[in-house]
Amino acid sequence: MTALSGARWRAGFAHHSFTFAYNLRVPRAQRILGVNRTVHTAEHLASLFFALGVPMQPVPRAELFAGASPLSGRYAVLHPFASEPLKTWSAERFCEVARYLRLWNIEPVFLAGPDDDTAAFRAHTVFQGNLEEAKRVVSKATVFIGNDSGPAHMAAAFGVPAVVLFGNSNPAIWGPWRTESEILVAPDGLDKVTVSRVIAAIERLRTLEEAHA
Image (tube, rainbow, N blue to C red):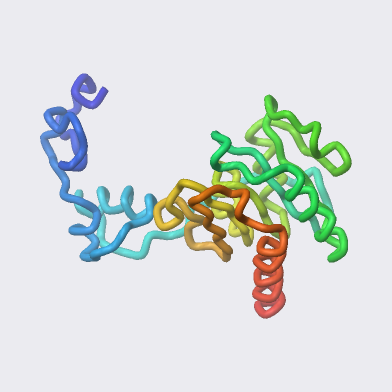
């Protein structure tokens, strides 16, 4: 697509495949940013703009905009779905977390897409809708708890404190960017993550929230 665009200037990273399509080849993000570490995907994309002349600056948190939430009061969004089984914590453990949230007077709301099977969560509030509706629900949540997936990044863009479970993905690259978060990593399988570990992570976020109030 780049080669066929007809654009006068076609920029891309020199270490990517099919660099023949570019007439502006950009070095790796680490070289542009002057760091010797794994860079987050937000930094990686921003480095391309820095290489093309945008002044170097801290990469801000993404921002999303949404209409009014259809829900009111203190509620938590739980997202138990993901693109593949290795990224998915068990439904039973999500439901156990939901019961703990009610003890803190926070209503658990399970977020689902139009095609997700929500049968395991029928004892709780389930919000199943399109992307625009999901944005409205996530935007006003007290906390987000979920797998490494799109809604976790949505929560980060709204500045919602988040607990995110990572299986075979690298949170240094894909973790919530510039928002309060607790990252739980289990490269050998998310079945290794206990409910108590998630509860402790939520407690730490609540402590931070109260300290900043």
